[in-house]
Image (cartoon, rainbow, N blue to C red):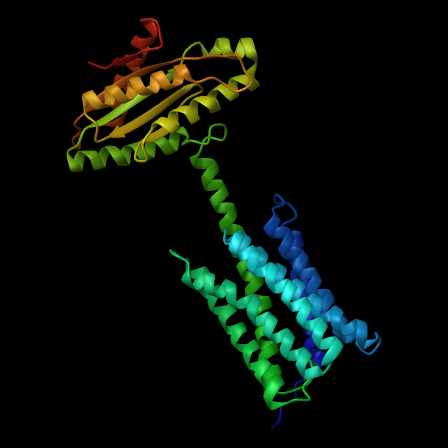
Amino acid sequence: MDVQLDIETLLYLFILGNLFSALLITFYRYHFSKDTGSILFIISKWIQVVYWSSILLWDCIPQTAAIPLSNALILAGGGLEITSLLKLMGMLDRKAKLYYSGLAAGSILSFAIIILFFNHANLRVASTSLWVLLFVIYPGYRLKTAKGRTPLQNILGSIFYSVAAVMLLRTFVALFVEPGMGPLTANPAQYLYYMGMFIMLAGGIAAFVMLSNEHSYEKLKRIATYDSLTGILGRRAFLLEAELKLALAARKQECCSLLLLDLDHFKKVNDTYGHDNGDKVLQDFALTIEGALDNGDLFGRVGGEEFAIMLCGQDVQSSSLKAEELREAVKAASVHGLACLYTVSIGIITVLPDQQTGLSTLFKLSDRALYQAKQEGRDRVVRAG
């Protein structure tokens, strides 16, 4: 039995599908913080609702206005959807922006030339299909070749490649197989085209929801891991990482040093300059210390004005030199826009750990050394005996 492609029914399905997804995503993101990627995706869905609706109005609108409008809408809607997904995955870099800027300019120019000089339905179909192909092939390539790509990125890349293949077939059919082909012509290439659009519709929504959840999870993970004021590790994250480093040092039989740092007279800074300026001091302090540490060193905020550093692979002499270097760096630092100099006291312990060496013991010993540094006049390094 022959099955005829009912274009009008499919158009209504796409209108309802995009309308439903636009409403779903709009309400889904309503209570979330508004990020650019989500806003672009929502806008793209509403543009696609208008696009599929505009095709039904072709009999009521002059073709000179309807055709350019519809093509502009599909390219704008699809382009924004792809852009939003790339942004959510952190792939919307300068190269991608230049690529899509060039595509936007090229598609406008080529379609204007076709409308003015070669205004045939099959050429319009071929041109639009070719530009859509170029829009979707780039994210497919980026996703399939990304280092450490996730299963979601791999599936999404395959979807983009599949849609690109369908667009290439549609272009070929419009140019060489069926010269009279228009956007509403029923043929196997159109079956595949609408199937590809359906896959993009379903895949785009699924990808957006999954990427949004992934993005929210990463944001919560960062909040739980890093101190919001200074941007360095928080207490819990530092302790977890320090435990791992201590265990690794025990296996490798290398020295490990724990430094506790406490800003001197920090309460006086807050009382004299205010808490806002006290926060600036903490931020400046964290930046100063980070700038003096090596990549493998661990640095975290473990209290209000108390910080900790884990140095691995440094013996007593080298860790003492590093502690003095940090103290001098802090003493030489100054807070921009604030006439406030500050110093730091440091307690340090160096051990050659074994499997029984506990991080809590190192904290107690270095804390005693820090207390001694405070008692002896501050702005100094004291090593635990």
